[in-house]
Picture 1 (cartoon, one colour):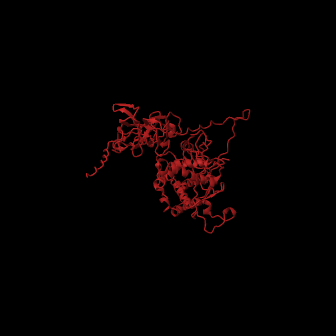
Picture 2: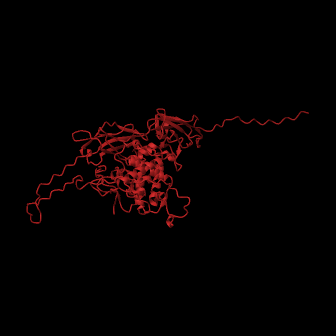
Picture 3: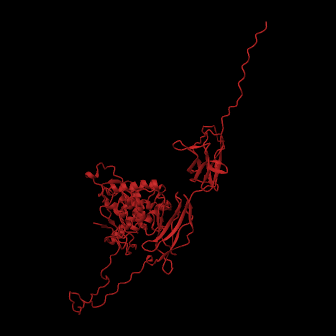
Length: 575
C-alpha cells in the first residue's frame, strides 16, 4: 500500500505546548558549541534561499520529532547485543540507522568528497534530512537494492495548506496528473527530481524511491551554489533550500548534531519511525458550519413527479461552479529577454554576464512569483555555478528571473541555455552562448642555453617555453611545434632535427600540445640526422603567440694541438 505523509494527526493543545517547550529545551541544550562550529539558529535569523524556487520538497510537511536529550553513545555497562534481549535506551534506539540507508548516506558522502570537495558534505546531514523527511525510509523499509518497498508520497501540493505546484511529470513519479507530490525517502518534488536526480546505485536508472539515488541527489542538491557546509552560512542556506522553514532548519540541525555524537547500524526494517508531523495541527475542512446552533428547516418535498428511470428534476438550478482564481503562472503568456548581453567566455572561466528573463502576460505586463527553469542544452561541459546543468529561479517583483552565473568548461564552441516556465506549457526562450579557446599572446624560452647537437646524435637540452596573456600566465593553451624550412617558409622540413613518435618514427610536427597550470610547455627530446647546419623550430599557440627557436647541428670540433715530436736521440759524446 502506498504510504502518504499528508495525514493530519489530531493532537490537543497540551501536546502542542509540550512539543514547543521541547523544541526550545533541545535547541538550548544541543546547540552545537564545538562540533564543526554549527549552532541552532533563532527564528529571526533564517533567510530564504533566493536562488531557488519552492525547495527540493516543495516545502512539504515533515516529521517534527526531536532527538532524545540523552547521548546516543552506548552505555559503558551495556555488554550484550540488543538482539539477544538487552534493553536498549531511547537514545541508543534513535541513533540506530537502517543498514542499507546508512550505506547510501556514506556512499553519497564519498562521491561528493571527490566531485565537490569544497562542499564538505557530512553524511550525518543526509541522515538528519532523511530522518526528518521519511523517518529513514520508514525505518528502513527497503529491498536489497535500496528501493522502498512501497512509495513514500507527500500530500498533493494543491495550495490547500501547502504550496501550489501543478503537475510537472504527468504523474510519472507521484501518480498524480493534477498536482505534484513529494516522492521517495528524501521527498523530492518531481520538478526538482527532473534535474537533480542521480543514479546512486549504478543501475542506469534515476529513481527517487531508491535510497542510493535519492541520497546522492540530495547531496548534490545541498552542494550546489558553491555552498561550503562546514560554515554556518553555507549549512543554513543549504538546509533552507531543501525546505524553507526555520523550524525545519532547527529540527535538521538537532538531528545532525545528535548523529555526529554517535550512530550504529540496525537491520533494515527495524528503525524507529517518528510520529509528529509539521501538519499535525492544520484544521480539517468542516462539513457544516460549527457556529450554527439553530436547527435547519425541514426539507420540502420536491413537487415534481419522478421521471421514468427514477430521475427527478431539480427544484432549482444548481449553483454555478466558481471560477478558480488564476495563479501567477496561469497568467504567463510569453517569456522575453530582460537585457541579457552577449554570452561568451574563455574556456575554464566564468561568464561575465548572466541571463535575465522576464515573464509577461499577453498584454505585456510582467508577472512576479513565477518559476523559470534554465536548462543548458547542447554538447558542452559548461555548467551553472555549483556544477548543475539546470537551475530554477523565481521571478522578482519586476517579473525578472536572473539565472546563476555560467561557468565555462574546457569544451569550446556554441551551446544554448533554454528558459521555460515551470508548470506552464508555452514557448521557451533560447539564449546562445559560446566558449572560446584559451589564448596566449607571448611565448618565451625558459632557458638561454644554445641548442646544439652532432650529426646522428640527440640534443642535450629539451625545449621549454612559457606562455602568457597580457602578462598573466596562460594555462591550458593549445600549441603546435613544427620544424620548418625557413623563417619565411613555414613548410615542414624534410631533413635535419626531428622528434620521435611512440613507435620511434621520425616526426617533425607535434599537435595537441598544451601549456600546464604554470603556462609551461616542455617539448619531447630532439634528435639530429646526418645533415649539418642551422635549423628552425617554430612553436605557435591559440591566440597568435609565436616563437622561433634556432637549432644547430655541427660536427664535433676535433681541432687540438698536435702531439710534440719525440726528441731525437742524443748524439754520442765525442771522444
